[in-house]
Length: 100
Image (cartoon, rainbow, N blue to C red):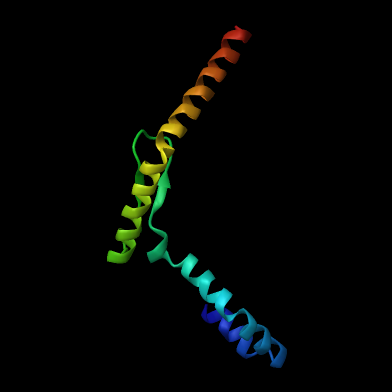
């Protein structure tokens, strides 16, 4: 955000007016990119939700990672992925058997 702000402040009047018009949008973008709000990275291909948070995660980041895991479980993402992986494996096996 500092780089964007610096560019706007050093870009003349038109940049400053544009920055003013985009101020709320840029704040929303910063919140979306905030690692503390994002939670952890999801590892797919396992039969349980596995999320990896950064080693320097604070309490807020851990909290959002737990919320992210709950959302994954509630949405049935793991079961859906397992079904897709099993279907793909069966298709690959059928293709291999057809070639043999």
